[in-house]
Amino acid sequence: MILGLIRLFVVCCAMFILQHKLKRLKIELQAWNKNYFSNVHNVVLLKQGLLLDIQQTLETTSLSDIDGLIYQEKIAKKEFDHVLHYKYLF
Image (cartoon, rainbow, N blue to C red; front, top):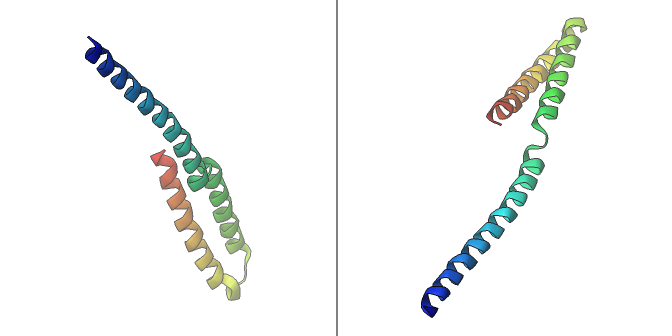
């Protein structure tokens, strides 16, 4: 009888410890997600705005400055696609 109570106590205690660890893990993962990925929706809007600004500048610029802007547009497009991919994953 006492052995059964000890086993029950150990199992309950282990479940309590696991539950506590999972709650702490959840909090840590949420903080990591926010710090690592930031707010994905805001980043998508920021990168989209940057890409649109570069494209509008391309339309009004002279031919002598166009090479640098095309390179910037290529980088901005790649960054926008990358962030958009993360948005669809989440």
